[in-house]
Length: 355
Ligand code: BTN
Image (cartoon, rainbow, N blue to C red; front, side):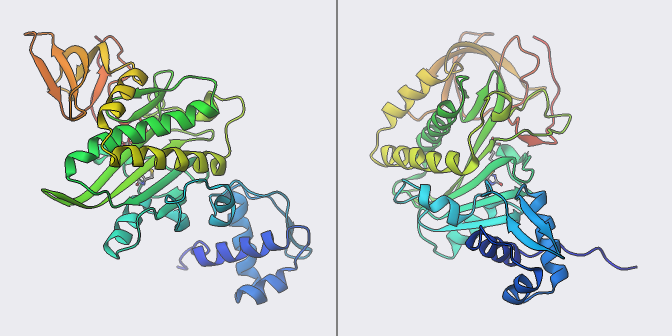
């Protein structure tokens, strides 16, 4: 039996888009594209079809030639670069139409000693990673999936304030694009009307006193998304709340600018200011009844702000003890929907519970 044809290569897709963009007002014949890209006309046609599936509007067909009908909202370096206002973040950009995980790509780059601020973007992830081993639902063209390679100076405890700071940046980027006020669920989920629209994953390689590198991964559900059944009650996208959702390129550029400012703030040791801002921006941080942990090991209490390190303090209902919560999940008590902390993730476990 013949095996199904493979998807067009990243190289061919980038080359084809480059040709179409450079000749945006012209119809280019399939034969000329094939010559320039050193592939068959059939391969050109398949690559055009692939781009169309990603939402790129290409007019024409093999007999007439092809023409770009509109500049696509793809996260291509050529489209992103002119919008960037972050001197460090995005200095080097690697874009993939489809990748297992931008997080994995950034970590490999870290091992190759690639520079700080290198940015890894994808239209689609086939094995997007969420926190606590969950998967991140990453369909083509519907979200912003990015990872940034960082080389922060300082010991590992610096990373929690950095993660909180990244949450503030994501929240602001979304707030500027949406009429609905986003909320932050400790440590770093961004919610719109109680459902998760963005998540942050910060991974690192470190020794006790020094971080070698960190990779900051951010996933934002931007366009209309067909969420898997188990995520539908938990997850949302900007498209569900914004009459005019932002372009991914515009959102990405603004997010990088905000992230870079927050990174500087964390590097300058301003953790107290970050914590205070997080407490103001998050309805979870203070005076909220919460359920902590995963079934069957949950307990309840009321939040009392963040401690010096950035961990959540919760007064346990059962005995009045003040507990430092070092990991989630955290959900509001009395809400039997938000039982899981990784609403962007697929295949999550746990049991919804009424309170
Ligand atoms: C979470 O569980 O809330 C964190 C989700 C982080 C997802 C992003 S998408 C881009 C980057 N690549 C990954 O594989 N994961 C992060």
